[in-house]
Length: 230
Image (cartoon, rainbow, N blue to C red):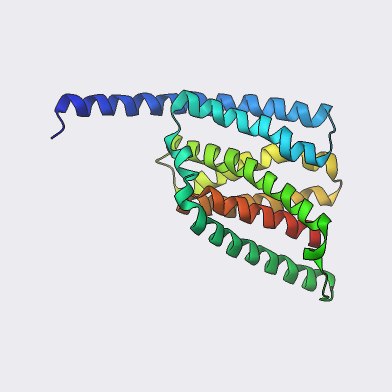
């Protein structure tokens, strides 16, 4: 039976980890946003470089640093290989729902017609899907496995809705520089609304499942949906 002294030590370790989480989360986020903003503003590299290399540096390294400082057990748990099969299946289902919704919206909003297009036979499609997977991988790791896990720990007494909205807000703030650079006029507002709603949905799914793989696949399919329909 664990002694009182042992329980006190465990409680003390948990308290120190919680304290580190509170101290590190937002300063690290602010620093990451600043260097990400500078990178987006000052440099213009090919899309493949941004998604494969750029995000591995600007999103991957902060997560590694956070895990090193705080232990980040819950972040690591979201990447547990045991969750992969169920996560991928749920991600495919969510991605299919996104695709159906976007197709229906395009059909109603633009009066589009449904035609058979052999997308899967195109090497360009699979290259874009690979880039979508890279985007989904790094952004899920950063915004959900890292940011949302930190928000859930840092603000554990908040309602789930507030936790989700904060996570989605952080997701949106990081994407606004790219939106402003790529779009103009009312398209900016449209992109902001789409991204925010997408982030809200992803955050709710992550809060309930804590499964990295689900969000990677649904994110990649969502990107392909936007490429085809928007």
